[in-house]
Length: 96
Image (cartoon, rainbow, N blue to C red):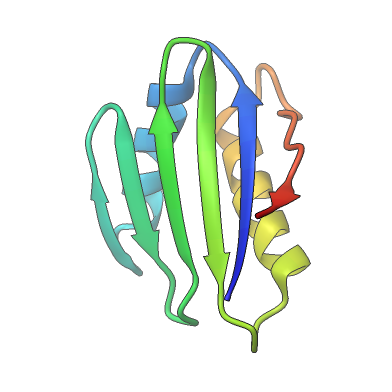
């Protein structure tokens, strides 16, 4: 498994977290609140999010058999759609 994390500066973190979770809830296993969210992808990847007043923290766990860069792109492009007024958001991905 590969774990990538990013701290995304935004004052709308909770809004974006909830929008993304609702958007993917019809396809994937999703749990979320205003502050935290978890999305399990069919390919075994898991996205965990935590919102505060200044940032959206994301942690993406991807199985070794999957393309980490592609999954990072899926997450960032979807969040950018919801953040169209301030997109593109800054994702400084770090592998941990």
